[in-house]
Length: 391
Image (cartoon, rainbow, N blue to C red; front, side, top):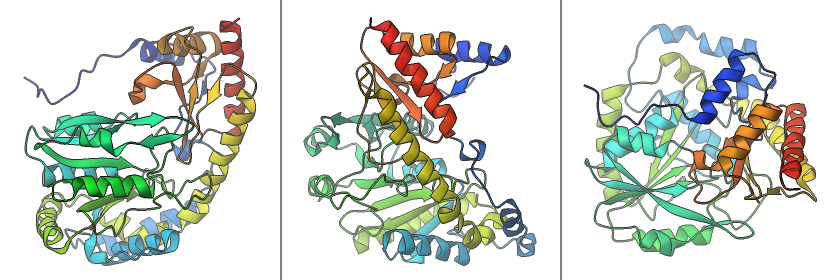
């Protein structure tokens, strides 16, 4: 009696073991923690609560795109962080990046049509596409002394059913940014086709260092119909306030058509609370206050990972930003065996590469957001386990 759009719900061996250890209250070192509110960051609690307590929120004033002060706060963020001017009339507020994807799939795709999504990447697209009756087809990110995207591999996957290409920059978990040359290749490939760009930039604030070759943001890209997604969840470390946004740009004629249709979708849902919209100008202050702590935490843990694996059989793959690190382990065991052994014998929780749809083995993915002491202890246990397992 249930929809075929829902994925299988059976737990895997790793999640079953983890559930058992948690039920036994085993002391776990969780290197998968990506919730910024649970990793010891300092939040100005009183200021956040005051911002969310604006009495104007007691009056409901629906707006399909969002309250003007919230739209202006989003535009100011792009000017401050990326020196890019975004017109508030080209911004739509949503409750989350996942909802933004849902709206855009409704906007761009008929049932059965497809979007191209990166591999490896966070295991979100297949579910979101399936729930919208849309097909997700993966294009590969390749690794050779760094991650890169080959437009020729995108070309091989483009067909009459393709409605959008999803770019995640920086990607989760690879930490790779889209480069200017790669973007130009995509633009050249898509010019004259009815294909839009959906650019997920939720981690764009978290580059480990500067690089003039990368695309800092696709906001304002007028070469193709382009939708840039982000929200307060990552830049300000506020996943609980549920404020995301879509910034649209592109050639004038097709952009105007998209705006009309996106207005209709947004007006159908009106999902963002008044309290969050009115609080937005003050909540964006946390991009520096809390986001600054996250930037320092991720850089420190990245440095700790480099130090921990130096001279060992564990390789830390190059990454440019984000909240994750990718470790390559010897293929003396399968990913699942490595993860199960680390969990059962060392009580260290990590993600296997197949969770992010890596094409080959053996990879582990760890969160750079963890408390520094937990992260360092967990990396030491991983290296020690691998050394024991390869001798």
